[in-house]
Amino acid sequence: MSSELLPPAQPSFVLRGHSAQVHAVRFIQGNTRLLSADAEGWLVSWSLASKRPVAVWRAHSNAILGIGSWGQDRIITHGRDSKLAVWQLDLADEEAIGKTLPVDNPPASTPQPWLLHMLTVNTLNFCSFAMCLDGMPQSYTMHAAIKARKHPPPILIAVPNTIDSGGIDIYQLPSESRAAMIHADRNMTTGMVMALDVQAESTRLQVIAGYESGHTMVFVQSDPGAQFQRLYCSQPHSQPSLLVLSMAILPSRDCYMTSSADAIIAKHPLPAVQGIWKTELKPFKVVQTKHAGQQGLQIRSDGKIFATAGWDARVRVYSSKTMKELAVLKWHKVGCYTTTFAEVVSCCCIKTEEDVPVKQEDTEDQDEKSMLHHTAAVSIVQQRRDAKAQSTHWLAAGSKDGKISLWDIY
Image 1 (tube, rainbow, N blue to C red):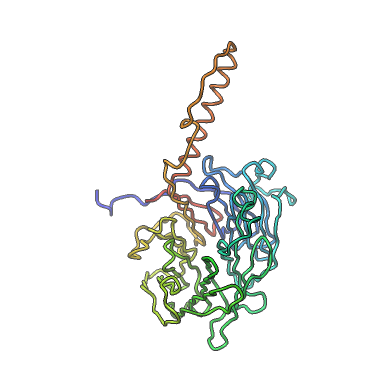
Image 2 (tube, rainbow, N blue to C red):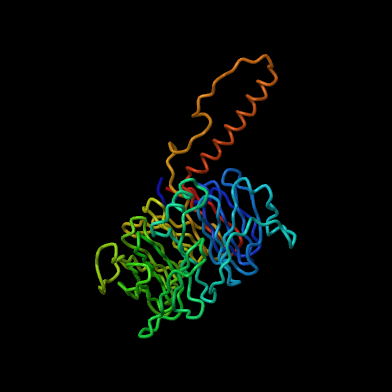
């Protein structure tokens, strides 16, 4: 059959629960949970097996700009109330958290997860935080605690500077201390920081920023306490819509992508990775997509494809290598703001009770045996559902309509 005659693709599932526009989505807990955050500060954790909410609470008094995960049981939220919060929510903690969705008018006071950290940060830029593991060698005590899984490894958080909207602050958690700062370039008019990403390797820290002017820059700090050096600067995004909306580093760590309010998507080098110092390199590739306003750019964990959320209500999937458009997913009627991919997991890496040999013991209580058999069967069915949810190549998109579409692709 010709592709022209095929019906348009439809989402596998649609999650309805937010009464305000969805600003951020993210898969956590090995693809067993999907987090979604909206413009009224509500956060919902969805079970991917049942497609139902397992935890709902109002994390911020204003819109949530971004969400992230830290270790197995910590959730990071960044709100327009100038707060960055770290919550502890393990699977066992979900029973104590409310399940009433924002669209169903939950009570004003609802149970919340344990609040571990709260930072006061700049949110005037509408720029979400970026995070990475702290590459600095840890003390023996911290290393032992991490190995014993008592604590997740330390992380670095990058946000726009509190006073200078063109500068960048970098905090370390769990210490809540400011680890570094990048000052705005006074010799160049860049405007506010609009998008950030960060990565660390041993003592070297690399920060990638996108600006209101359409510029994108790469800064590198070779050692703690040293001044940041700007290694790369480019302005691929053009008039009349300059501002960089989103960016993401490829898993290979040798390049990154940017999208903007214009119709351009660009692939840029990461000079520090390639051993290049203070060069005026140009982007590897600049693609005129003819579709303005693509944001929420996310790259899948295998690095093969990336997706954008469009103001025209379409989600577009591209090849990371060729940057050619592979699919256009249209279901929402109004603009989309965010996308996220589930981590690509091999089915052989997911274990269920079926894989574990069970020793049969003699017993005279046939009813007890029957009950145990039934319980085991139910458990196996549940694990099959969880395993299927974990191994599916999900792409989730959040929209202005308050809905999240789930797509099973490639």
